[in-house]
Length: 269
Image (cartoon, rainbow, N blue to C red):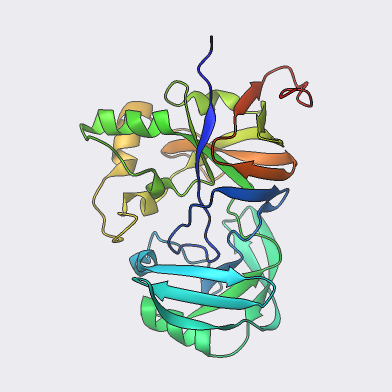
């Protein structure tokens, strides 16, 4: 019998680049997981800020209450900035040259001052009208792939949080997800369509707890997988993007079924 594939972990964050939360379940829409990447930071040129050049973000975590519009940022469990978020007008943001999204600048100096002090440069907090995902609304990575990376590196294990994937699944051969481009996948009641490979950036070299560069992930990935074409150019690839065809809830432990035939609606019946 084939090895069962199941959701092993889910990862979200209200503010792009900040520490991840691992909820038991998420509500996945055609625009991403509800509550994920609601906010992001831009510098004074409008460029989106990520962990690649901003290790300080690793130490911060955020919680956002969408009903009260209250954002709370903590460091080491201590609240360091909190308040109701109001907006101050629209702003267009280029997302890596792939698309332009219209969002809203967050009003007041509280948030810009706080994050600018943390990063040591002028930045503004922006609220997305939807989710500020990078390429596609969902990402997928097998724990077997992460285990294989650790084996190749001669390490007892690699922390999957480095890769900041929305859905991690267990079971299957290492990098089996690479074969799912254009394939329909049913995760719980959600139907996804596998997309292209995720080009990894230097943010994956950072320890997800400290932000320190402590593992040369790009070099290790390339050493046994080579470099591949992606929508963001040629590079080290690890995990895949997915489009959401049928939204719904996903929970840890849900089965993941691969449907090469395209007849997805009755997969779980």
